[in-house]
Image 1 (cartoon, rainbow, N blue to C red):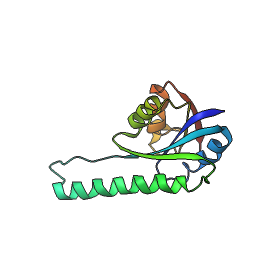
Image 2 (image 1 turned 90 degrees about the vertical axis):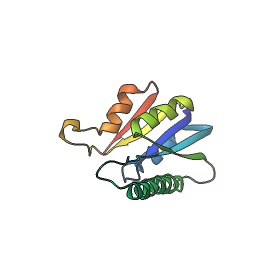
Image 3 (image 1 turned 45 degrees about the vertical axis):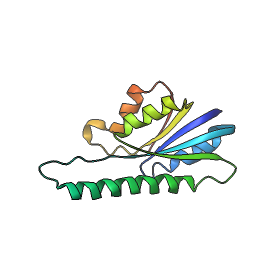
Image 4 (image 1 turned 180 degrees about the horizontal axis):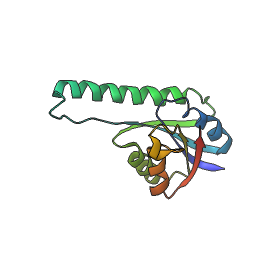
Length: 140
């Protein structure tokens, strides 16, 4: 059993598979941290500043909606906290897992990152390479 479990979510159907596993693996009195990462774009020659600001605002809003939607799958008997960070998903997952001293990361792979990542998405691949925590990979 694990005392602190990190559940990263992108709002996909695959990430909802993490919920079932987390419920089985959480120790009594443990905590579940649901993480959404907002990938922000930067202003370039092709993007006007006001459009970039709107897109970034929408991305943060979507990340908040994703974590809140996942949190609804846990009843009041679970200690659940939601967190939204901005940046690159794998970096934020690893940083939060280490900073919050998570015992386990449960992460789903949709394998949607191209042929060079057959079987694993690039976010999952980077988490697996860099993280020193236990990881439960839920493959599609």
